[in-house]
Image (cartoon, rainbow, N blue to C red; front, top):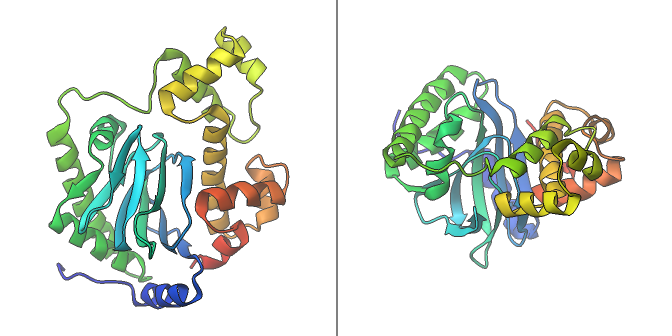
Length: 284
């Protein structure tokens, strides 16, 4: 149960991708509690803008390297490391080598990693742990095989235990990034309550008894991302889930607060790297 394993299907796709010099993605939602999404991708030139997720991002890079900013600090993905990016904290990502990068990502809900661990994760998101790296790779293999859900759950339990061990050793009354000071936190809570229908800045200012410009400055200063960009990140996150459920992009656009399919496509491609229709077709 400790041998490394790489999905053969994904490897073939990545070889084809390099030949065509085009981004390639594969995404699916497994029947494993705690795993929101599995996302495999190969990018040569695409760079993620600043965005947020509402889930924990567990990342391993199989080829190349990624550089990214998290909480205004630059990080990278050294060889044989595992990167854990916490929810609600803005980050970006771009290739750190001329050949781009090939990555495997798990988006995990809070059942394995509690919010109190966000602070330690922000302080040091890149974990140099060969055993953890091996186990995350084995977990991806199990998730790629229908019928092996019990194995995947077992491996996820071991991965979660090891991640919690790393983070708790660092947590000595750690700060709570991603929460932000009072006014910014209140605005974020309002945005989270109105992801689909949206929020008029003047209404938010009235509810929070603050000038609109001050609201924008406070939010951007606390989270490193403006309110509108945060809202679009949350909408795209919801759109990903619905696309993996099989809904067509037009219906997804209406269900997640975008004006139309073109509006969804523009923001989805900007944050995910491929259009929503292609992302949906990549789902298993």
